[in-house]
Amino acid sequence: MSLLAAILVGLIGGGALHFLHPPPYGEALLGGVIIMAAGYVLSVAVEAAQKDVSRSFATIILALLAVLPEYAVDIYLAYMGGEHPHYVHYATANMTGANRMLLGLFWPIVGFVGVYVARGVKAVRGKAVLLDRSLRLEIFFLLVATLYSFKLPLTGRIDLLDSFVLITLFVIYAWIASSSHLREEEFEGIVGEIVSLPKTFRVALVILLFVLAGGLILISVEKFTEGLIETGKLVGISEYLLIQWVAPVASELPELVVAILLALKGKTTTAIGALVSSKVNQWTLLVGALPLAYSLGSGKLVPLPLDAIQREELFLTAAQSLFGSVLIADMKLSREDALMLFLLFWMQWLIPIPSVRMVVGIVYVVLALLLIFKDRSRMLSLLRYFWQ
Image 1 (cartoon, rainbow, N blue to C red):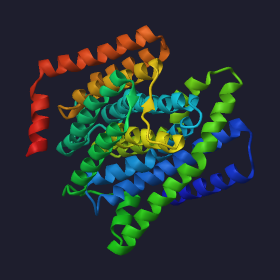
Image 2: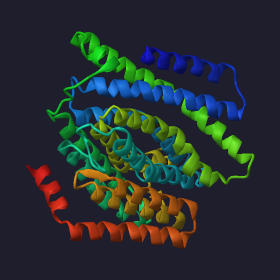
Image 3: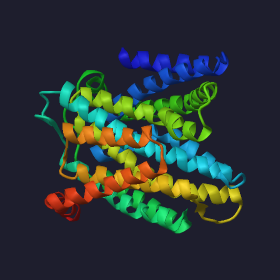
């Protein structure tokens, strides 16, 4: 019944959003409700999908659908940047804001849920969430994509070679994940009912749920974002900050809802895996697509230019990603780890001064290097696992 209720809320809310034309604050509120309903539908679909596909491949599907609105926003802004250069500034703002929110805010929230709420499950021990060995695939590719991304602020552009490298990384990652034989074995509640259905009907239903949830997100995210932006303008918030921090709320909120619901059910590895997979998707497929969209808008093959602010934002985002990937390379996320990610995120968010943000970026890099120096086995085991 809860699944049916979420679907009805999404469909009725979607109709009201598009035909009643509420004021901006109404669009923001109604759009948020629809996105949360879609997030629950996604959580059911991704769990049920693990009956027939590998856990890693299921989390890729989840991550792609959950961040689909962000892809649409970023690619649209990059495309418009080909004709109107000031849009390029907004495209990277949205991408970097979403990336840092995902790691600095969502990872800690799910970690706290895993430690404090989902106690007693096998994925939680003491004050740390234990991650499954299968997530080393995601962590490895996140680390590789992150190391490559440091090139972007150094060169001051994202060119077509970068697109080729990053998109190729995503294709390899998706191919390896799809060939994994790890399956979810325990199902309960509505998911248990779905997986007990005949395979043909079950697969069709899961695909329908994915499509429905993705459709609900797509039809609501634009009005949700525009409603937030228009509401924010009334209090004098800059457009850059709105695009960097408000727009990603709409695109990333479904993912947080999904991850929390999974963590509450004791499926912490799946929850963290979806968030890590989203980081891989954003650093590979999304960033790689931006120069292509920019070239399409320009009418010729050209690199996406980065100004000083964009280079600073990309460095900070890459530094945070480096620290995060090294932090969980030992296959656990402790309460202290989550708290550190959370505090560093809020420090660079609450003090948007270039010098402070650069210092925080350097702190991320230094902490990552200290972790590697202190415990070299975490990186060696990651490499050994991948090349087995």
